Amino acid sequence: MRKSYREKSGGLVLVLVLWVLVLLAILAVGLVVQTQLDDAVRIAAADKVKARWLGRAGINLAISELFKDDSKTDGPGDPWYDSRLTFRAIAMDYGVFTVYGSRFDPDGQTVYGAVDEASKLNVNVCDMEQLMKLPGMNQPLADAIVKWRQEKGHENGFSTLRQLGVVDFADREVLYGEDSDLDGLLGNNENDGEAQPPMDDQDGQLDRGVLAYLTVYSYELNQDGQGRARININTADALELEVALEIDPSYAKWIDFNRDYRQISDILDKQENEPGAPEANQEGGDPMKRPTFELFRRIADRITVDQEKVIPGRININTAGREVLMTLPGIQQKMVLAIIEHRRSLTEGFGSIAEVLTVPGMTLTQFKEFEPAITVRSNVFTLRSSGIARRTHLREDIEAVIDRGSGAPVVLYWKEN
Image 1: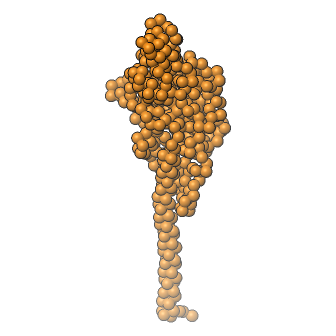
Image 2: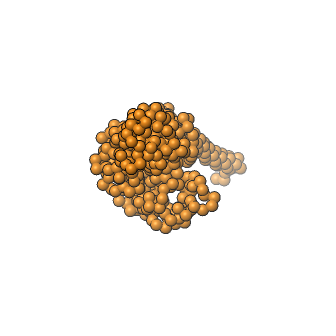
Image 3: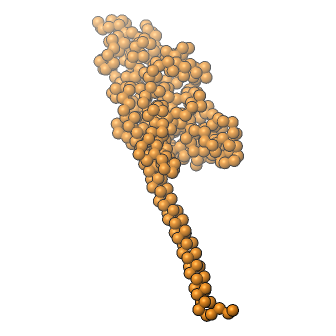
């Protein structure tokens, strides 16, 4: 029986309605998916901002800890140096932050806190011999670095470590080793052979490259631990030495008479009653006495032979690792190990450079080789903070170099992902 026109048209309408419903359903699903994608993008964008601010919170906390430190020296006993409690996975409303240190830890443990730039070798003032003592350094690169510093227009040296990439023979593998992100931590991509860059030997040990041991920022203020300008033993007269250093007049006269010192430990060189020395009690004065080791230890931080207010490149013997201590002039590995072992027994590290003379086996001759190159204080620090958003686990990394030498934080370098 043939269907009527009305029946046929009704069926067609039904089919069209069904197709319309299908299309509407598809559009609805698409809209839901698009909305979800938009929400995901908005959430990711929001969490990226939160992670960045969490990272910044870590930087601010580290700066605060640096300025809390009122000790007369800088070393492992300070609050900024390495503290899991202060710097590891610190929870806030929207996530956590961690401040990582990248010092070399012989036990392979992650350290948390600020990185002392004075624990490294300053590439702007070191010599060829020191550069060649660094792990991974080669002669062509060392030559190129020194040559670059001597060229016209480069008198101020390198402004950042990354600028080393412009010199000849600055191979990325030599500069960075396996530490592609320069964070001092062994990442998954830094221990997987050739699977992901950089190429590594997959031995579970991080080859840090030469950049890990170099800096362009380190300097020492020519001041003692109380912030007082040091006394120049080449220019101060006997009375000034006596009053400023609070020493016996006989020692002050000795220092005054034997001036023309190249370094402060030279006051221990001269022998009593040498030809040309004034007679004891001359003109009714006190006898001259050569300063003792004990006196030198007491006044070493108060005296100087340098007229400059800022002395670049001195290495902090409280924070430098074995590799950097090995670059000190004239030092041998046995003495480096003795210094490291001795400072472990000191709660706050060496109180002055003269206290290195108390290291077992140390002689005055050995000490004089590297005395002008060392310090016990630091002014510039690298801070690396990672913020992680709680909801999406998005991570933002921030690196900052902070100078606290002027009494207020000065940002020398800032990098965000």
